[in-house]
Image (cartoon, rainbow, N blue to C red; front, side):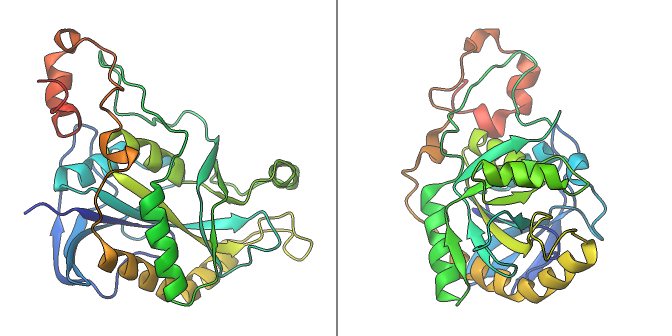
Length: 286
């Protein structure tokens, strides 16, 4: 049976306490191994697949993550809705540590990361003006509000390379641009989810004020983990509430993002590429 709901847990969120009927599933992909085995189970009466983004024991740097294998693995399982939790720094005074943000835009400050399934003889260009699924984001916001979280709707997530935190000059620059939060992982997930026609949203957990704030002139892992541990219970409530409200009718652009995106003539696509990407492009390359 396919599983239509996926959850990605970031720093500090390595499990979902309410998940029952658990089973580990290893998924092979043309892009190698995902970060860890997927944990499938039941959450609020729905079948879900959970993935620890950084692997068991938090072993992978943001730059080392095999984003393609992670998203392709979800696609192989049948996932259509993907909720991603992520630790972020705040670039605005009003977004306080322990708050949640449901962003609606990205700014890319990564370098050299692979952000597409395409290439090797198959070219596609998907629309990405609105990088998050509006309907899924709204559902996450409603769940956070119902759970009693202090949650902010909208905002731009700066995705930096890391693994170092920002310099003070960088932090001040992003603030001058009007950016809202900063993290290291979610942009590639969102791009690949869009190519895979999966609805995707981020539940961003604010852990710190980056280094721009006079009372937080440096960021430490100790500070982040302390706040994340306290916030993990709320994050799990928000995710569980959102899962309980799924599914919805997928009339959003996510569901058909590849319909007019593939530009390569079908007879020019290498057979091996067609085979490898069949879960994603099979219905368009008959």
